[in-house]
Every structure is written in structure tokens, then in C-alpha cells.
Length: 144
Length: 369
Image (cartoon, rainbow over all chains, first blue to last red):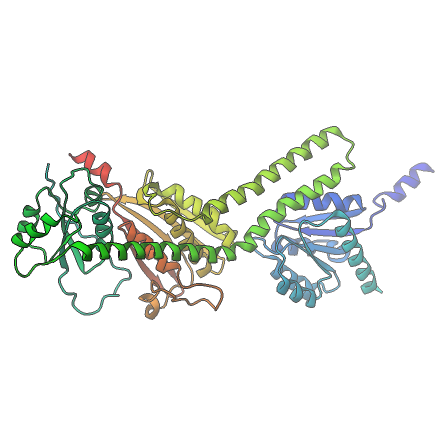
């Protein structure tokens, strides 16, 4: 009886959603992961826009990715290019920008393109979690 | 004790093909007096293409202008009469302030030689000092204007460590595992150190340069320092950087000003590549001369603009993006260092800026005598 139960719940441990963190700084990915994992999210990482596109196009991520948290200034494929790709190919996946540079013009333009939030580092854990939670709501609405 | 050095005229072309029509023979100028005034005149006149300083003299064999003359390979004479007799200058500039010299000169020079002395030469010296101050101010103004473009880079480099510090500190507030606490505290310390390095780099870069700080500069180290600074102005992540450094390449001049020259050339190169391409930095000592090359694989400069790029206020950047003083200031700094700058460029292929400096003349002379 107990064996059957444990088998039934494998992988079902309170996963609030799957978040892809795109940032070239491993330190940033580490702390964002730390914060979001504590809040019950499953966290994937990519070190630039190109890698992020690979991640979202691989296997079940195509369907199961809920939110993308993306930096702007990155090597190879930068945040702007990656965001344009995501908006085009995965319009239902909400995007949050987490950048080191507060740029009003860029923020306005990205929010117009449908980015859910434009966060400037350093952002407190609570604010990041609240932003991801808002994005999750959008994601759920999009599924309806 | 009299040193006769052959006059090696340094090529002073700014750009290939900027000179038009036949050039008249240079005015031959002799300088009497190698104190502060004589040194300033020598420095200024030596930078002018149409003037040849044919010799300098001073009673005091340790006068600063004589040392400068050695660096510039300008002939030094012990006797005024020797200088005038052997060089037949068109113009004699007497900055000794000595009235006896005035009458002695009148007797020695031929009728087609002009003499500048007394208050007139003092006025010239003051004008030169004034121009030097203006150039320093202009350089500083352009440098500070350029620092505005560092904002994105600085924000990136400060806010990233801050995000790490904040995230770790939030975590530490709840962390119970002592090993994890120690590890994260160390990460925080490292992140703080990285942030302070940014402030250190930038304060030293932005400080006002003093003209009297000339010395021997290690060119390779200065280029590396410039790369560190340029990162704030332009994104280097996607630029392939190739360095071909010969060891121990040196130049004589002001280290802060040369750093500014390198930062400017690297920034221009990266901007020309629109953040993707190959940046090549080369240094070498060739026949005792120092040669530095900064090349890019960017958009290149159209031939019709090539002879205007060193002009003040010439810019192809949109309003607010460039002062048009970058290359003008670079040219001034390089001339002050008695060097030359040339550019070769091909549209859509890239540009190469070549800087040549006299190198370490003191060491060279010491080796040969």
C-alpha cells in the first residue's frame, strides 16, 4: 500500500511552475535559483539568449516552461534578440526582464512588446517572487 | 662635450594622402636658451611640420631643454656661434632674457636671419603655455564627456554583484547550515571587492592629468589597462581580442594621456564593429622606434572622410553620441609625445591605426656611447 503511494507521488512534490533563468553571470543564476527554488519553482538555467532558445526548444520544455527571467546584456545572442524570439515563437510564455541597467526607453519598448515586468538589479527576493507569481497568473489565464 | 646628432625628422603624416600640393621647405629655427622657455618652445615647434628646429644651445649643460633635445635628436651646441655658423637658421629665438646676448646675436647672424628676443620671445612662450593648458582642458572635457557612455557598463558591473550580495544576504538570514553560511559570507566579500575595483579603475581614469608627469610607459600594460576601462563603454563580450605583444615595449610620455588614447582607439574600434568582430592589438620595437597598432574588422572609414577624422569636432556619430574631439585629442597627445599616428581603412573591411613613438632614446644612447 505505502509503496504504491510513494510511487504515485514521485515528481509531484509541490512544483509551482518551471522557470528559465537567462543570465551570463553564474552568480546571478545561482541566487535567482536559490530564491525561486525556495518558493517551490523548478529552475532551469541558460547563460545567453542562444542557450535559452535551445533550452525552450528541447523536449518537454516546449510545453512545460511557465516563465522566463531574462537579462539584457549578454554575449552571443543578447536579451533583446532572445526576447524577440520568445515573443514570436512562444507568445504564451510570460517574460520578466532582470537587468543591471535601468533604461526607461528600453523598459517602455519591452513592456510594449508584452514583457510582464522590467526589474532592475538588485531586486529583493520578495519582489522577484511576486513578479514570477504575477507572470504565472498570466500564464494560467493564457491556458484558459 | 658638444653633441652633434644628425637630425632625424620623424614622419608626421596624420593620414595617408592628407597633404596637398608641393610642401615648401621647412623654416629653420635655432633656439638659444634651454631652460623652461626654451624647452616649451622646442616641444611646440618640433610638432609643427613646416618648422625644423636645427639646434639648441645653453651655457648650462644640464639645462632641461638639452635633455629634451637629445630625446628628439635635435642637435645641441655649446657655442651660439657654432650653431649659427653651421646651421644658417632662418630664425633665431633667444629666450635667455640676457641683453648681452641680444647684441652678440646681432653681430653674428646674417642679414636674412630674423631674431626674436626679449618680450617677444616671452610672449611666444606665454602663448605656448596657454595653448598647452587649453589642450589639457580639452582632453579632460572630452574624457569626462566620454565617461557618460560608461553608465551602462558601470551599472552592469555594480548591480550584478549587488544582486549576488542581496540574494546571499537574504538567504543568510534564514540559513542554518554553518558551512553554507561561511561559504556565502566569503562570496559576499568577493563580490564587494569586485565592486570596489570598478570605482578604483574609474577614479584613476577620470582624474585630471598633469602635464609634468612624463615618464617611461610600459605600452603592453597600458593597453591591457585600456581594455579594462573600454569594457565599460562598449560591450566586448562578442569581440575576439587578439594580442600580439612584443615584450618590454616602451614609450616616453604621460601615462594617463596614453591610457586615454588607447581607451579611445579601442572604443572606436569596437563601435565600428557593431559589437562583433576581431580587435587586434599589436606592439613592437622596430629600429628603436615603438610601434603600436589597433585594428578592427568593422565598417571602415570612407576615403573621402579619411583626411577629416583628426579634425576637431568632426564626427559621424549622431548628435549627443560623440564630441568629435576624440581623435583630435589623440593626435595632440601623440604629437606631444613626439610620435605619429596614421590610419589605413577599407570600407566594410576595417581600420588600422598605427602609432609610432621615438621609444626609449635615453636607453638607446646609453647603449651606443
